[in-house]
Length: 134
Image (tube, rainbow, N blue to C red):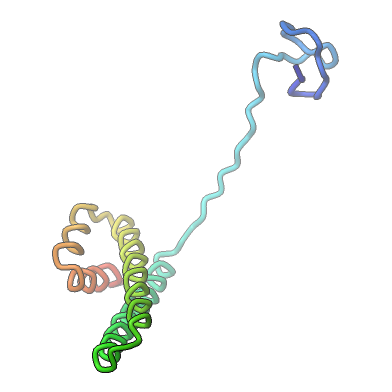
């Protein structure tokens, strides 16, 4: 066994106290945990939601453009699929951020889910406008 206080090696198996410093071997010392609270301003979260909203809108436009290019030329399917993946990922990030904003503004999760998944695109626009009003 090893003493938690001084690090002295104790050869006896059933010792209750350290031979070197005399501290108890049965109780492990509790480490003091320091919790730091990080204050995030609501304006910063709204700015982040705005940036994600713009990314999502740009992804919608890019996906539509590459879909038209794919239909007209019967090629470049990979560009369409990449922008479609970008659209889905940016939408997921936007919904996560909007959900955090709705929790911060004391809106229920059930109401948020019904708004965004009943009519996904219109619900996302509605949630963004509702949650980012100052």
